[in-house]
Length: 147
Image (cartoon, rainbow, N blue to C red; front, top):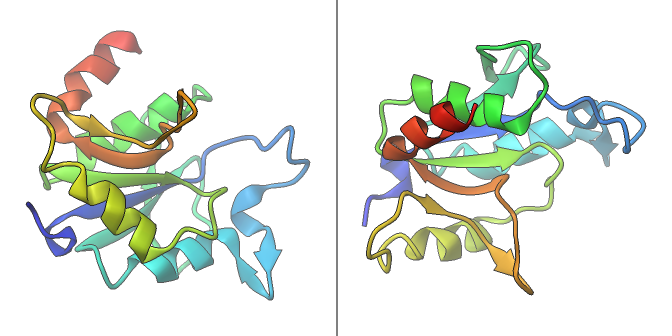
């Protein structure tokens, strides 16, 4: 299994947060923004951790501009996969500030059991959560076809 230290992580920040009512990337918990909280969780386990979206939210976190103005999570995923040099990459939405390294590691272990596949995302009661998972560079062609 590829170590997470040889993988990149991308935090998707491009959403409009219409239902939430304010920009999730700058929402705070105990004085720390969602973006910063996720970054702190990821930074020691991944080679590079970048935010991906329409605009940068932190001078401390490397930013990657979405390739399109179109508003969809798929734009962030495509942008990340076009950018990466790592075969496997962790992608997470900025609205998951309570993610832990243990949960990420448990999901990463699922990569080993893949017979044939390029995406590992959690499923709970049959519902998949695509904005928290590991994506192989090979999946980029499928996202580009769907876009």
